[in-house]
Length: 383
Figure (cartoon, rainbow, N blue to C red):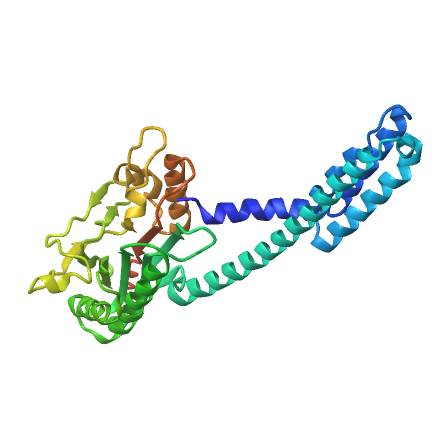
């Protein structure tokens, strides 16, 4: 995956640098060429070098200022022509050739500047729409939701976009904290539309339904009604109704990992693997939720397949999340933000800084309930 946020950061730095240079860069080029021509004497004809000024303006200033630079360069060449003796040349084809080449480059530079400005405005509009869509679909959760702490890292594979086919949601409901992480087959607008269907159905069912299996059935029904033909979504549902356990329901998604306080990692393989959402009607029954005990300091690591299928450019191996996540997450149940950044940085290090798929990393740690206060000793009564 070409990392959209990194590209945008680099483009922003480059744009700010060029913006600070502004119109001074092409003007400096004109001045340098003019001074070099004067220093070289009448026997040297260096003014054609001014032809570099319009292209420099095309990448630093607006198309209107690029026109100004073009005229300024042309005026400079005209002013230096008598000094260089160009007007005394019998063959005026040299002058016409220079004028034609300079005019052509200037016109092309003005066009490039106009296209650059148009592209920048379109990019800004697309980014704004993507940010609005991301906040509408993937509402960033607070660091604490109900009785759990959490941290998330979401990156879309699409350039200039911030949403994709991966999805997640964490909600505080009357039934406890309920979470969903999933991955829609495919990419692009179709995947985003299916993500919207899944998240909308989950946010409704999570409050209404009493069991995870009923929540999943509601989501699956909504996908069947509103999704496009052939859509399916790998999904993992979780419910935190007590601090010492989590209830999981698996629909073909990547199994979560449990990292203990001392860094031991256990893959929570479902006892009842099942088909993804959208394909559940191919069988009669549904998966059975199962409960996993949690100890103080445990952290649950949820992810999408963009994490475990990320390849190293050196040896083409997949990212070994289960082997690496322990030291990166252990003892971090009170600081999950730092932990998720460490895991994501390690993932980028493995892949050489680029990923090929959407990525969701979600870390969740239940908050232990405080111990009840010891009752005070009864007062001593003396006779």
